[in-house]
Image 1: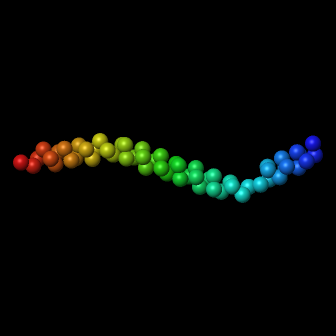
Image 2: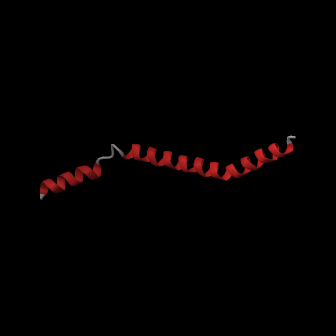
Image 3: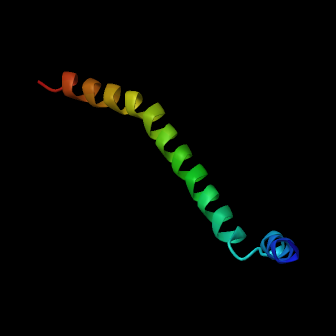
Length: 57
């Protein structure tokens, strides 16, 4: 039982992978923001191209 407690204590104090997880979460947040803005802007870009295409003879 004491070996289990010692291993559990070591795992709780180990923070080697914490920064990589934080960077992964930050990267996911940035990716979601970029994808969201692309969906938001896609309609405006489509309308602009349609306006340009319709104004050409």
